[in-house]
Amino acid sequence: MKRISLIKSTFYNEDDTKKKLCDFIKRTSRLSMSEQCKKFEEKFGKFQNRKYSVFVSSGSMANLVLIQSLLNLGYIKKGAKVGVSSLTWATNIMPLIQLGLEPVLIDCEKETLNVSCRNIEEKYKNIKFSCLFLTNALGFCSDIDKIQKFCQKKSIHFIEDNCESLGSEYKGVKLGNFGIASTFSFFVGHHLSTIEGGMICTDDEILYQNIVMTRAHGWSRNLSEENKSKIKKEYQVNDFYDKYMFYDLAYNARPTEISGFIGNIQIDYIEEIVNKREKNFLKFYEGIKKNPDIEKIDLKNITKISNFGVPLILKSKQIGLKYREKFEKNNIEIRPIISGSMSKQPFFRKYVASSSSNFPNSELIHENGFYFGNNPELDENEIKRILDILEKDIT
Image (cartoon, rainbow, N blue to C red; front, side, top):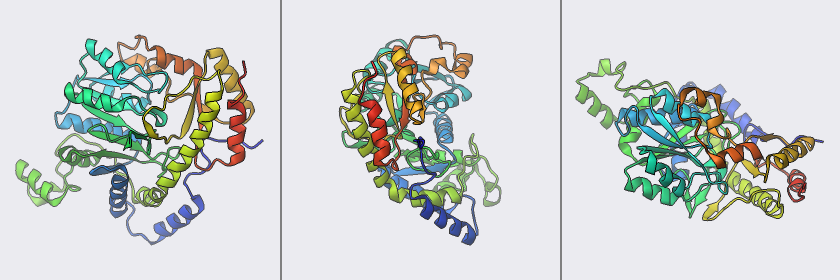
């Protein structure tokens, strides 16, 4: 029985992409960050409906660079508390700890896998966090428009990790457009692959300029000529010394022209990729609705659904183990849902004093859940194999 993997190919339309990539490498004279990366930023920003996009070396670096830029500009201060979902990926939390901030875990809703405004308001009563770093988990969200309004009312800096939900829409608005900035991943297993790569999007020009510098050593060289002149004048630096002048805390998170070139090919397929993932998911969703063993997912106000994995939350741990065994026996690759409950992660328990708090929904998902892949190359026979399991309750 052929294995159904989380992904089938490194790229969508892989053979053509590889041929074009080989030709590009042979004929180009520069492979470090340049025009291909800039072009990809422009194309991605247009798709996402954001004014500014900054291409970086990975989705994890996108998170780190964004948090550093918020600190550089004083939007948030060292020691500040940052609200985060307790069901998230490790590199949403790690930059906060590494940069001297305090992560405050907020439980998610079982029906959406995401933090709701209700969850946030309850946590905020006891802990006044000044920033909210929200994960849009596996293509879904809760009432993110209400979350946006609550953050505006309380002057909370709201940012989104949209690495798992590229193309999903809530009330017709793309996820990743509700916070002041958002991050994306182009890891090979995600919606759009540049092998490794990430993006930061924002409409805030001041934040954008600092992100550009934070991506590359704190240099001014990738700024517009106008902004480069302003910073040189502010610090009284001439053209010669500006080449090696470091204006703020930063990293080397630059992508390559190879990644940019791949991105420019793959972004042309993004609508097709998203539509196929949605079509697949809706078939699986119908199967899930028929099965009393599986908790139902709330899709209220989600007008476009795009995920790279379909989560299953079973009614008990014992039932979950039975379904995991059945998927594995049918040679279908499965994984835990994101990182599970973050409070159970060793690094979090080591570095965060409040890690013993209770997060019932995240822990339930951790114990009873798993996901299988939803890639745009699934064929009808593979979809049927999965549906045969989903539509027949074990208990």
